[in-house]
Length: 170
Image (cartoon, rainbow, N blue to C red; front, top):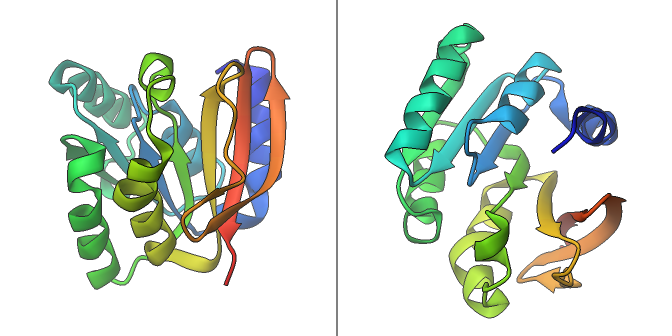
């Protein structure tokens, strides 16, 4: 994601950032979560399955001196997210913003029904009442209108990517 796209995205998300809890799923090197911390979020949880990428993420967290505000989850998001979120909720940390930023190759093969059950429904249950899920996709993948209990509220195009904002409908 380009610097100007990140700046625009964080500007949109400013109301949720102040003291909030942010998830960065499929985080790679963690730039979205780390930027959220530098823009006022109190805590960030990062998830990725690639151990080499996670090592780089940990170095980035150390470089930013953000260790105390960060949790790193290693494993397949689809398989482990519900358990990770249960622990987060038990600790009294509902989610204000969840970045869902899959590799484009994976996003092009996603089965939305399966992802609703494995990712988006658990996210909706862990969110604050006005929490937001930010889904980044390549522009050749149509973004769904809804994902389980989440409904698309807004879409932004940034070059060859789409960023869709989802919130609970209840």
